Length: 197
Image (cartoon, rainbow, N blue to C red):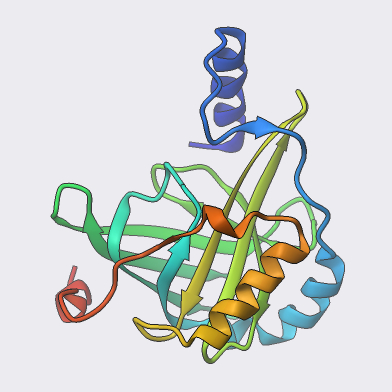
């Protein structure tokens, strides 16, 4: 599904007074994407590898609910992503995606997963070895926007000092950190099984 299709669906929903609850009044926060882009492009290869989802804001497009493990493969231009974990029905699920430079030349990456729509993928802060705080926001011309935020970790758990770094990064752009829900990870997650999905 592409962004145009999503916009048309949202416009139709708005016309019928049925705006999805993840679309709210206002506009995306100001983010210094040029600065972040300049710092991160030379380090894109360092972002590759396994990232576990530590927490996220409500996201209807995130079909994997527990034990979320994302593996990023970088080919010197873009990332191929394999996400695995447990869906709401208790079954193992694998989703495939891509993360690539914005085709319109905007200074951020674009994330594009199957059964979703392409949207901005901004890495607000990362040290590449422990944590990453990522943000996606789309403005609609009607004065509405939708945003999704994630905290990633290189291991199934994350030290509180890194959680605080992400919280500070999100607060800096006025994202309410009380919206975050912790992703279930740990001993009961079938990480070895997920590698073969």
